[in-house]
Image (cartoon, rainbow, N blue to C red; front, side, top):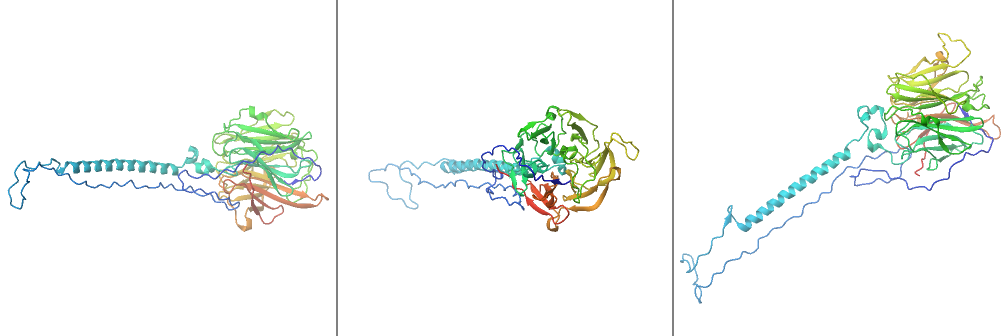
Length: 532
């Protein structure tokens, strides 16, 4: 779908005061590294340096220099006052007491023996010390190189991303490695100055948001734009925006650190985030590093009665009016193969109703949805246990007649399937159905939604700036939208229109791709994230 900016009105969304920026965190390196890389990040082709290899400084032990002192010779009293006659070879011994024989130990003089013994003892002690020190040093090196991963990820690394694979992959700046990414359109709001907002997980774990303005500039993402502080590492994030009774709402859904579904709500009448009723329902999420979560608006486009029609992918208008109902569908995993579904209706804002579960699904992948189109059909996209994307449909017509080929008010699987997707792919639909393939590329499929007759148009693509297919991080979260901006003076003239897709390609980034709505070259950019 394409969102048209409302050129009229001067309403500005309340933004909390900006906090004093803090110093940016430095990239962490191994405690045993002798160097620290503090160079500025390169936005587009950032490469994470490997941890430095520890090398202990080697100091030679003090050298001991030994020398012999002059030997003391025993002096005998003269035999008489005139002394002893000189002795020569063959002369008889002098008169008087013969010289005493020095005692020896193990054939050595006592002093020499003790010197040698002391030297041997010192060498032994020094050898033991060096051996122990070397052993400790090696153990430290081993620990520095040890992979510290989630136990689940050690067995199934293809279902994990970022720090869950190895603690050295945790981000120290920008976005969390494995951050959820969600998008909420804003061009439909009265007096809106932004086209859309993206929600992501900051490297410190907080969920924050940024706004993309009509001047194609980014703003926000600081400590003044915090949505939640209790998010699980790498949580999926889902955003729903709509208008109800002239009040504009944004709902954000995520998984908390204690594995609960959480809901935060922002209304333009208050200007601050509040907990939603789902927080009190104790919806326990399957405990695994990477799992899907999706909230999807159903009913007329954002619930605004002024939007009876909406431009299609080719720039034309829908010929059928939207239904007037307002609601939200929510999916989250309760075990390794089951998604639970809850639904909410605007006529009872505090009530969520549990629906039938979805079984035999790959809950490590995301959920896609399309439920704001013309007519009464809604669609849900899920990945099965064979890593194939399935498309399900339901006709909510309450007055029609159900047939075997077209049953009413039950979920039915369409014949169209898309195989060979990444085991942890996210799914997103706006004009095209986006997903990550097994080769890590991001593809868009032009699905023609028609209940049991749903089919795939040949107009499909791989995101490939300058003709080179892009490979995102395996298991990256993704989100997508389409924007059409009318001329300020003549709304019938479209100044520009574009598709946008957001993924992670490095680990601490949010990478954006854009191309004209009706086709053309893909452009790539790195969203500059606040270090505050």
